[in-house]
Amino acid sequence: MKKCAVSILAPLFVVMMTGCATVSMVDSWKDPKLPPKSYRDFLVVGISQKWQMRQVFEEVFTAELRKRGISATPSYTITGVEEKPSRESLERAVRSTSADAVITARIVATKQETVKSSGYVMTDRGYTNPIFSRDDVMPVDLFGFYGASTVSYATFDSKPVDVTTSTTTTIETNLFDVATKKLVWSNTANAVEPAGFITASEDFAKVVINAMSKEGFIP
Image (cartoon, rainbow, N blue to C red; front, side, top):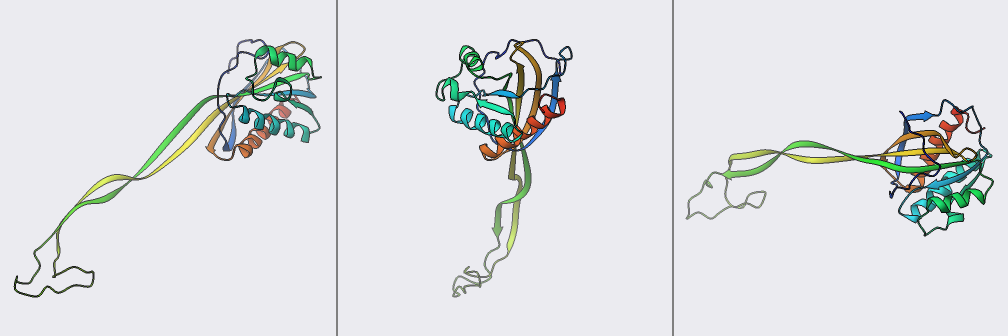
């Protein structure tokens, strides 16, 4: 995956993050020109139009980093929780902390797939005349019908009887070096099947943090 050089904290996109139960890596990119560097203090930025979702995501991701003994700060605690963060406010947040790295996450695509299972549904049926005369007393059969009759015809149609929809959300994570203000690593992950947002954020954070560890970006 080829990436163009971008300035730190590139323009924000308005997105809403959805919760997912299964998260998997799709691809990643690392600047081959930069020497290996391990980061110990992160500013965590969730890019979302919904401030509640941004707050939850940043708190969860920060907590997962801290479990590994790494310092991290949710950006909303500095920029404010209800105001949409801007490039300027996030840069001020970087300067007000000891962060040596900024990690951002945003949704780049959401795709739904629908699978329809077909079955046969009776659309019409007919009966022969009851086998008794008009003068007879109509007997009631076991099922509550008057007279004895048999089905003479029935029509069926193939129609969808079951619909299963799966949702795949593609999330992009970018890691910026504070000293150089350059993008050093980018990761794309797919999250499949909606679930609780907190659980989804935890699953996503673990996948991304493990990937950063393998790349040597965190101890």
